Image (cartoon, rainbow, N blue to C red; front, top):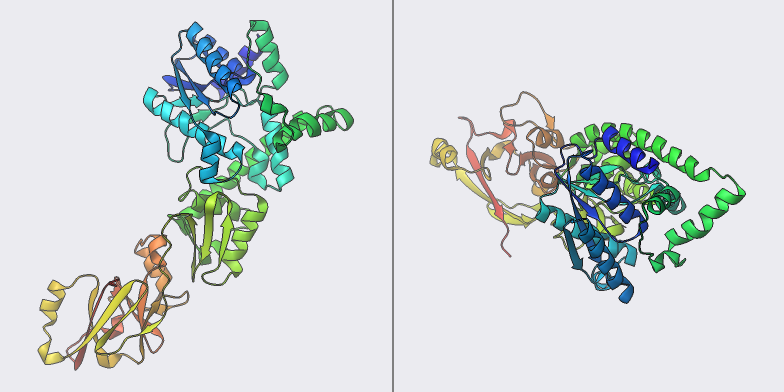
Length: 472
């Protein structure tokens, strides 16, 4: 039983089931899932792995009676082995109408959502699915045809989090096993399985790759072409992991909550930029859609050359929105950030921009109790020496290149660096306003005034300022 020994070696070498007490196996009834189910049940029965197997079957309701027969088959197979099975029906066609995209994409979303639900109910630490080496070859070819970058050449991973941030791992124990080996194992074990008739439908790109392109390449060009693709995939995975480690360090510097700091992004090596983009996208879409090289190029160009308020639309309903110094990723249905414009501040008087209202009041110094003011003030209240300010006074978004001397500091700093040092989240930094006097920032609203504008014993007139959320 070479498949059994090969897969067991892979499971042990890659520690796929280490620390896993319960494993949910996706059991569609097809040859791959039946082979995987059989292997894991055998390993558990023989004490080769310390996990309990649960099965999960999702009826996609796409093939009528054929789907119902798949469900019956999966239940009977699990029952014969005394393995508990969770079964659910989800109308994938209806889900596709709601979310858009292809039937394959909708089915994938529903399937993984179902498996995550079963894993939570079963208290499972791992979910195993039956993708094999031929699936990997087809995936890489599909990505190449579409114009994918390095990540696409990696194909599917042996193990990854089931969901973004989840401790449950998704494992693919058959990913190094060819389809012919899967079928051989089933024959040796006398196991039957279900055939999905939709796998012969060449209107689907993957099926054309499987039934036409791959056969042509292996018969007319290179009989070992499939193995060559697998070697390419592993090499790409090694290179990608190295770049990912670099990108993670870069992302820690320039990415925060779905937003990229553009000035820091400029300094990132171009080979790492797509991975940094992926880190930012992961904040708004846990199950990141598959971007191709053209998408990453478009986002990079937007960041480096785009105009403020311009955007790029991406797969999965995601948009990249360019502002003054940041690139923010949003998903369809999310509230968009309030756009700020310049607004002159009359003294006395008030003005509103960027969702904020700023009020100004002029007070003679003898009538102003600085100590009482400091005890009562919030971060959105400030007092300044009015005669130290140049007019006009303007409330506006901060700009890259803006500098001021923070109260208590010896020298001037860039506003962007000041906000970063204050650990203001990137997504919030973009909305920060400044009060500019004569074109120079003198108050980073909600943060700090300029040292040179503070109230001193020589001050004759005090400008009292307060800011708050604008009323609708």
